[in-house]
Length: 418
Picture (cartoon, rainbow, N blue to C red):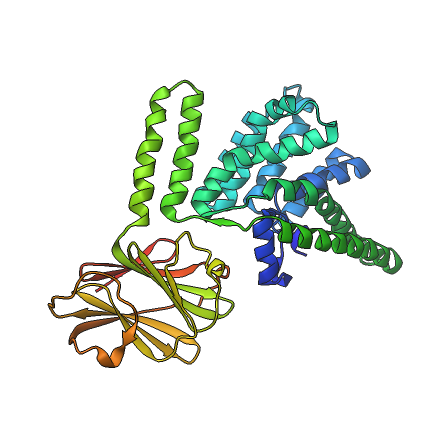
């Protein structure tokens, strides 16, 4: 259902995380890949005219995502061009597709799927032939697969790092090995839908589909075990990656002044590792609540259960982890505020307690009992832990304390809490 029609409601969260680790999340959302497969099969069987009509119906049936609309428009232009005696130009075709989509749905300019779809196609248009020439010694089939996989990620990967703050090290290998099998799944799944009224034929298709899915599941388990973990980036680090990519393009084009930019980027990275303002983040790891507190060069994690260091998929070096946390404790950050941690059953809540003027040193002190805290608090701000799903080990909510304000961040700045 997910691969053929984009309905991922039947896929478990753990499986979705495996898809992300392998860099093949696009196979469970109907995209240009699916549209091209469906059209190619239909054209072979019933000709291009009826194939275009049925492809349009498939686009509507699967929800009319930006990537499928883009693919249908490009296929339509490709097939019509020769009939009106015009030469097909792929760059003009993808540009027209973008204009048509944005005219009817201008908000798609902010959609990650829209951007990734067009950047992938743009990479293929610009670099596919060049990469094929560079890999001319490879067998033609392998050359074509490698070239498509690499060229499609040249523009999309930097954007994905900035937008999603993740990077899959083994995505090229995963796509190369698994996409041929998923192509068969798309074909058989759609055939099963068409032939569902014919019992014996439907069962035969299901048997073939089941066999292919078992092969895919085995290969994915092997790849998940062998390939390195997904890299997670902070917002600043993702911008650094994008900046280095732009520097590379600038130097390649002959603008040698770009060679000084990486020096500035190093200073940004050093500054990013030093937290001028305290940060408090909520993280969920296998149903265990974790509170991550960062200030200056120190980062500590407090959890209600047992976790490992690599369970926290954040770009931060954790100095110490307090496991099986119970009761109430306080962490003194500065003379202005203290962080209180309170466990309520399996939940962990953090509070920012603004204090009266004292002579406390500004540093992260280890946990101490709340009974030992005698400083009167003039204001207490409870930091809410939103019940939203994020991949295990990643940040749900982040709060930054600046002066007497607490700023809440999720996907972006949401509110300022006095």
